[in-house]
Structures are given as structure tokens and as C-alpha cells.
Image (cartoon, one colour):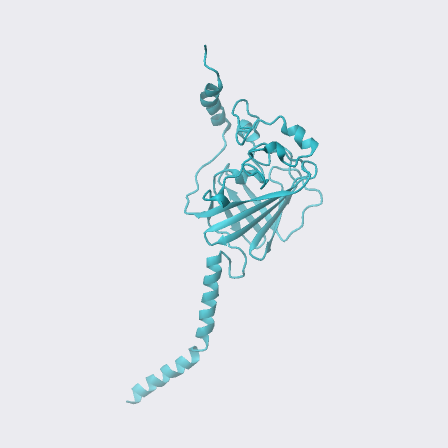
Length: 272
């Protein structure tokens, strides 16, 4: 009897000791579950882990051909707010996408030379992206061409950054959004699939945020005073993907082979 009484007393005291912590633990678990559902870390920052595939479902997931939201499919690419400098360069483009689409002697730097697509055009390809988040750097891995970039977090831009294909990127978290600010581009890439040019003054802002745990929204804003008379922007959606990541390389020999065996034969008029 004494043994049973002692056991009951220990159990009762144990319950008293642990009872106050149960509501806090439950609240903590509830908050963690809420953050996980919203795609956030325990600190409220966006959790971008996972593999993200372009989402083409519905009007919000439409495939973009330009970053001008007033003409996303490039039905009238000549109407973009180009300066005379950019409009003159645009006259000579022969893109493989959009209203001016042609594979006949295209001068698309990606299709013709396998040049890097650059930022932000690389987001227009139908392949996955992946993030690696550390306290000081966010790395973005692109399935297309197997390129990656490093975004320095909570840093300032260099006073005179080198001109590069991917530019110099710095980033920060604004609530539930990862904001990336990039300058220091060369002028060898196109902004989009339609051939809109840009200058070395290009300034790109990318904003990544979760719509929910399964969907990620990318908003891109373009500012290039030498090439465009105003800033413009568009959004693109991604969905969480099980993978795997494939090999998607741009190989000049394959491009040349495709051009000779497929494109040239279909573009050449048949003999009379």
C-alpha cells in the first residue's frame, strides 16, 4: 500500500511539474506548423528549400516571352518602352520566340553561340531552380546550362562592379520575401525570349515569396534608363517539384547539328 501511495504521489507531482510547459509546447508546435504551411522558417523568413519547377497552369502561370506585363506573350514586342538606342538595336534581332519568331539565321546569342542567357532571361526557360540559403549567402542553382550565382546577403554593391554575364547580386529579407538587387551586367544578353536588348546600366530587382507551401512567386522589375523610358515588371510562378534535376546543357555542337539537320531543311524552299 505504501508503495502504491508513493507511486501515485510521484506521478501527481510529475504532472504538476510538467503541466505548465504543455500549453507553451503546443503553441510552439502550432506556430511551427503555421510557418511550415506558409513556407517560412521559424524566424519568419522564406524557406526556399526544395526544387522549383515553372508552373504553367492557369493565367497566373502563363509562359512569359517578355517582362513587360502589358504584353507578356510579346504579341507586339516593338511597343516596349524602348529608347531610340534600344529600338535601333531591336530592329536587327531574329529571335526564336514571340511574334517575330524565326529559326532562319537567328542571332539569338543563346541559340547561335550558347552564350549564358543571363539575368533575368534565364527564368523564361522551362527548367527548375534551387536555392541554398546560408546566413551570409544565398546560392541559386539553375538546371538550364547548369549555372549558379551567389547572392551576398545584407551587403552593399561594389562602387565599380565588373561587367559580367550574371551581374553582381546583393540580397535581403523583407518579411516573407527574398529581395535580390543586381547590377554590373555586360550588354551581351537579351532581357527575354523576344530579343529586347539592355545596356550595362541594367538594374534588376527579383522578389521571391511563397503563395503557399507548394507555390513560389517571382516578381522581376527592370530598370535601364539607357534602353527603356520607364521601369516595368512581371511575375512568374513556380511549383514545388519532386525532381530529379536533369542534365540540360547548351552544347554548340548539338545546336549546330539541330540547325543543319532540322532547321535548315524546313526553312529551305523545295525545288520546283
